[in-house]
Amino acid sequence: MRIPRIFTHQTLTSDLKIDLDENASRHIAKVLRMEVGRDLTLFNGKGGEYPSTIIDVGKKIVRVEVGEFSPQDRQSPLPIHLGIGISRGERFDYVLQKATELGVSRITPLFTERTEVKLAGPRLEKKWQHWQQVIISSCEQCQRNLVPELNPAMKLDEWLPHVDEAARFVLHHRSEISLSETQAPKSVALVIGPEGGLSETEIVGCGSQGFQSLTLGPRVFRTETAPLAAISIMQYLWGDLG
Figure 1 (cartoon, rainbow, N blue to C red):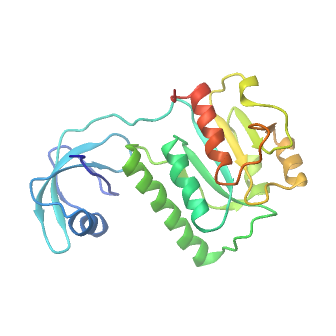
Figure 2: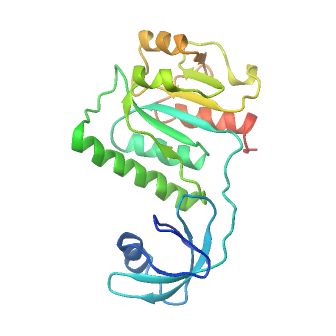
Figure 3: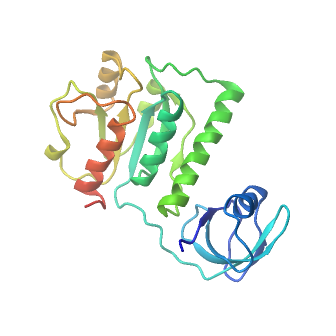
């Protein structure tokens, strides 16, 4: 039987008995229907994980006994910072989920010229919280213990000057340069547009900030396909896939 993995914001220490927060408790008791004596794994995004055991299931709170710390994080040796144009609905959630599974270390949602999603103020904050939960849920599933950093959403031209990764790529189908022609970098930044891609002006702007134009082949990928294909190739060539 697979042992469920649960994220918590709480401080974790071996041999500690704690009441999990209401959201985690509800998920364990109501969704997973776990009972006293069942094992689970806790992590809080600060590194490592804790095998734990349920010792009480109440109406609102689940109490657990925290076991011995395990330092394994399952991080890729290649830090990847994904700057991704915000797309509509489930497409963006899908990119966040799969990019997390593929091992990205940082994600910045970007507003670009062709971004059709209108978000600001409380609505943007609520959406950011939703995106954060998508990433956490993906970490629970794929067994990552360090949660990728989700930066605040910002305009592309505001983001570009602050990118400091060793290798920087802007993906678009009009380039002729492929990843196989690039030497292994210590870290990578990758920027990809929303539906409709980046404008010519934006591509030029990326180039002025040290981003190298990149293509993945002769076919034009959808906005939810392109980052996952690129990240997979990077992890195969320079990271921990394959």
